Amino acid sequence: MRQVFKKLFFLAILLTSFWLLPTYIHAQTDEERLRRLGEEITQYEKELERLGAEANTLSNLIAQYNTQIKLTQLKISQTEEKILLLGGRIEQLGDSLKALNNAYLERVVKTYKMSRFSEGYLLLFTLQNLDDAINSFNYLKKLQEADIDLLERLEKAQNLYEQEKSGQETLQKELETQKVSLSSQKNAKASLLQQTKNDEKRYQSLLAAARSELEAIQAIIAGKGVETQVRHVSEGERVASIINGASCNSSGTHLHFIVAQNRIVQNPFSYLRSGVSYENCSGSSCGSSDGDSFSPSGSWNWPINEQIKFSQGYGSTWAIRNSWVGRIYNFHNGIDIDSNSSKDVKSVKTGVLYRGSYVGYNGCSLRYVRVDHDDSEIDTFYLHINY
Image 1 (cartoon, rainbow, N blue to C red):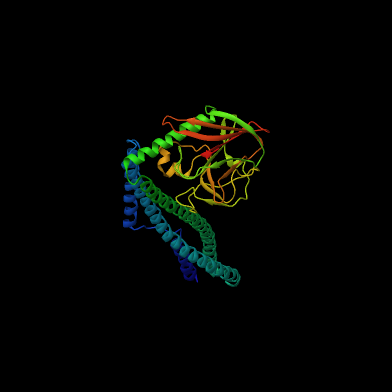
Image 2: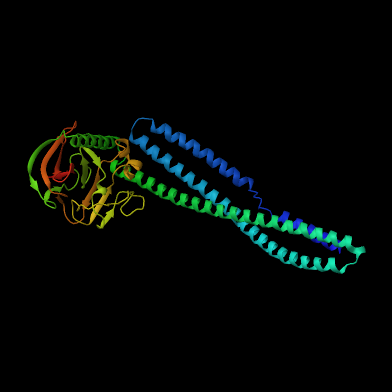
């Protein structure tokens, strides 16, 4: 009988040792591939930094796009490798958890049977066999202690499994974000080549126009425009019309709408009402998922009719992060919108209407209208318009 208990005890120890937390043995080739990817990523990051410090030319910007695209592709490969390796570990953990659960259930049944047998064993055996009975009882106690240890290891394995699954989900989200970024970068490069026709002079002309527009808008907000008071206007009254096509300091049809309180710009979305129909064209293409957030939360009616065509948001925008305009400014002080139904521009609040213009260093006269609101210290500006 003693030999039976010894065999069971050693079997329990063997099972406990075999089903410890899984040991992950990664293939050397996988680890080496990850290491090489990390080194390449570092090299491209340094190259991107170097290019950013060089002259602002079209060829340099294209080189930056190419480098950034390659860098993002490498990061995608790196993330995919991590997901693959983690997937293997999770699968191994799942198998180990299943084995641990089965082992624990079997051990509980066996330990219970042995405890019942041991109780009867101690009662039935005579004094001369008492030593064997006591030894068997001690083996039983050790097995029970091993059961407790196995349960603790099972709980730890379960926790690690949940952590690894959570890590896999995080990596998967990161991968999706990287793929969206790659698509944006490719589209931004294609847009640049389309706008410039791969011509350095055309590119420098675009930069000059954007620089001039920035100077003019900042001057207008600061009160340096030449203005004429027109009349008192009501909320919703027509005050101007959007210029069709390119115009002074504008590469295309849109209304640049600004909200300023005491000459300090505010986020227009904090004032404009939600619930309007719109088309989001602020990203790499109309309807793409990488565009600026369209998140109005105020009570004002919009200065143009629905459907709204939204081409750039407020603050740090997709265009700043992904296109050449980021070479000129790093903060967009209004929103760029257009209407798919009408070019009429309306006052968002009751107030005094001013017509103005500002002539920049390139001789371009940027027209705008301003409404000084009756009920607050707020002014709204409407740019790229005709009176």
